[in-house]
Length: 421
Image (cartoon, rainbow, N blue to C red; front, side):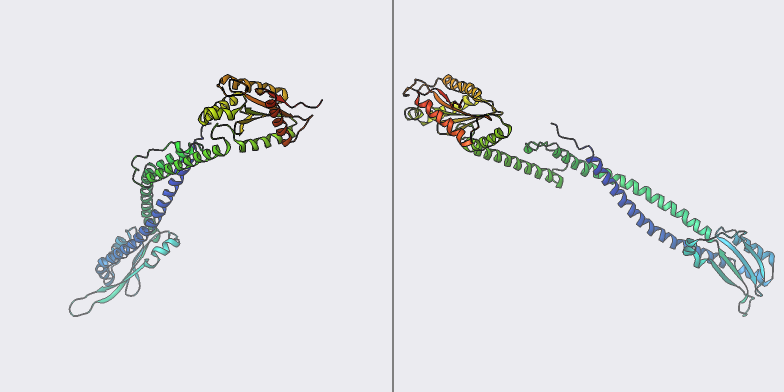
């Protein structure tokens, strides 16, 4: 079964990175833009005040002349020149009696909001006395005054226009910077991490040491490269642990000499299958197998030859059973046992004949046997059925008794426990 590919993981990580980068960039833009707008508002206030003061200072002499001479035409020209400035909402030139020689004001007063009041409310109104110097030692005389009011709505609009420009430029710069940062992080950090993630998800849990280790160019000596090497080391160590576990399992469940199941494995398997046979009301057969005159074989041919013979016998016996459901185990010394779940006495006898013939087919010479010239084996069979049930111990005892009978009756034969009629 092929491993599932990470279809959404990369999109989620890239999206989170992009959103976080954009959020940080726009927060920085907002803070920086706020400081820039505050600076712009302060600078604009200063410029407006300076420009208004300069304008009033420039026209002061001419306006004083008009007020001294009570010349409304000259006063009109001066006031009109000031009023033509788009920032000015109202201009009045008065004589020293408080009479208006010239006055201009907007036909419609534009409403001002809280922003206008906040920004320019304290610099709207300007007044300057008109001083006329007659010459000689006579000090200058105040002959009137000039009053000027600024158009806060217009000033606010200028400020907002500038603000839109600042904010728009800042947002464009932030978006461009964010795009560059996102692309940089994706190429140098996110994409390598996704390669590592994909490699891990494609790893076979049963063979972690064979994971598709990703090659991260340019990251051999940095944290990402070290991460891959650490993962590789960890997975290889885990693979070694699995191999050791399997080896220990092999040692605990299988006979070290013959490679078939050992006595411990047999005990567990037999107990499970006996319980299953009782629940499922199915037959269960066992075959005890003992190599004839094996002590004489070992004494004359040596233990090395004896071990080789046990391995050969175990191999051919194991080939005669269905290993998917049956079990062959080394019961001890030269004795083996077969557990046949779901098979009755007739099936067991058929399998036992095959086992006996398989041993004979090895044609292993046994010149010192008291009964045969080649290696042979005796077998005893017992079966429990729903009609004639036997306990687990009785089943093994009956099979062992039949093996004993086979040996007493000449060896190289099969004896089966006869069920009562």
